[in-house]
Length: 167
Image 1 (cartoon, rainbow, N blue to C red):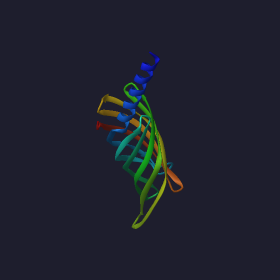
Image 2: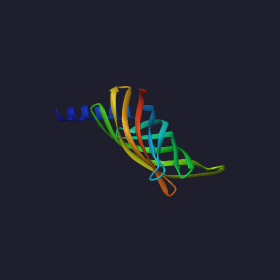
Image 3: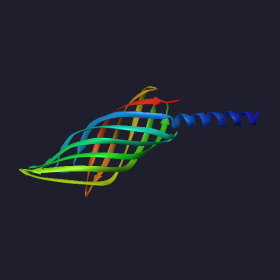
Image 4: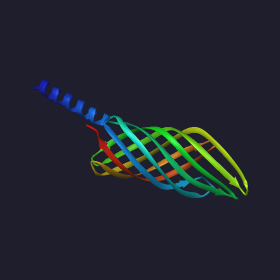
């Protein structure tokens, strides 16, 4: 009897791991970018794709336009491309996750008729949750901090994601 229970448990966990490896998802993000004291806030938007490599771990890549920060006549436009890992706690109908990775940012500054561009690669991290409306669609909210050179931009984001099971 114990052997049958062990075999059934092993088979169930194997199919769960195979299912997690087959998940592909893509989504859109919109929200508010907070540039820090004196620079104000702006709208942000972006897209991302990801895949579950383990039942509790995803990899993700995406693009975010972090809008404009303005201070004393200087306007800064920032966008970023990122790759991240996303450990996830899966509950019934809800995923709670953290996200950490690297992002390659590009910032264009303008003051009167003077312009300047700067780019670099820095760390990003955040937390969030997704609520599953169906097996294939979720909505959620997240917070992401994008470190940029000596500063940071905080993103408060709403997400809509489509999930595909390839098996």
